[in-house]
Amino acid sequence: MRLLHPFIPPLAVLLMASGSAGAQGVLIDRSEIRFVSKQMGINVEGKFRRWKANVDFKPADLARSRADFEIDLASVALGSEEAETAVKRPRWFDTSKFPLAKFESTGLKALGDNRYEIAGTLTLKGRSRDIAIPVLMKKDPAGNEVAEGAFTLQRLDFNLGDGQWADPDVVADDVQVKVKMVLPRVA
Image (cartoon, rainbow, N blue to C red; front, side, top):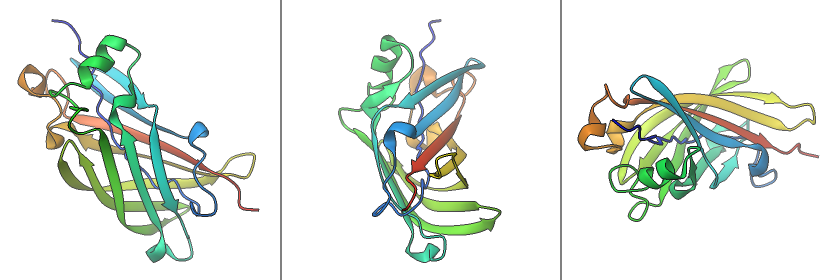
């Protein structure tokens, strides 16, 4: 049986990159949305090359903070042109019908020690699910805010992989999504 490297995003989803996006923005070239899935017990890693973030993070006013993302699913990078082509087909992402994955935050809460949780709705392949993303905020050596988080996505909740690929013994249902957002230092 030939391995098909399924992408399974996230979403990443998406994480609240942070820092007031209206004033700060997200440094896309230093940020990333990655994922790890398992196919027949072997890790398959990937990332998205193109995505947008609208982040407005106000630690003193979390009720007015937001973290919204759009991921161009056709920008998936799996290290193989064959796998990238396959994952764009209807069986997986169906990028011709569903070109974007979207995450819209519905609330943020502080967990202490520079940790936050971003609640929101992830929409992928026409299906929406509520998720919560834990995030750790820290500073890099240049003084930029860096938000890092990870969460687990169930691919079958979003109809990713059908036929033989729907079997979680072939391709695991759990997909680990890792997000790193870098926000420029506020002057």
